[in-house]
Image (tube, rainbow, N blue to C red; front, side, top):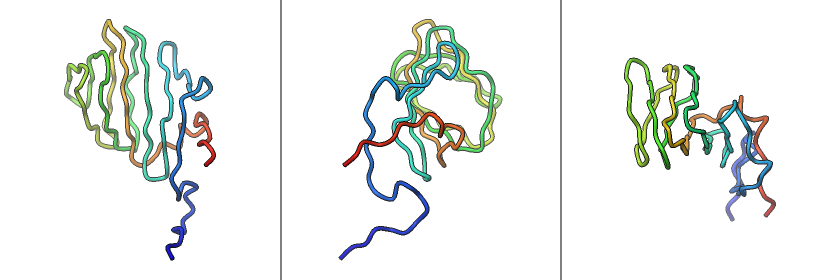
Length: 130
């Protein structure tokens, strides 16, 4: 018989989230975010960003992986400037400053953070019941 792992992580079992209006959070004008899934190990977020928006220069202690699903823009990462488009993906190491200037068509992007971002916890919907 297999037992459940013992940990303080509230998500020691599989969980599922669904898309609903209250799952979306407006981070800034023109920038909306939905936490898709998370545990203490990592967090996946979907961003919908209006044309011409800017995610200002910032850094955080989380590794960040992402993929542009629709649209594109100029992504400043450290001393580099990347011209990103749909289908392009990236990795930003912890602590590296980055800024995103969204192009004329807007942007849909998925980011994955390791470990999860505690600062996003106030905007996470509860998982669906089994």
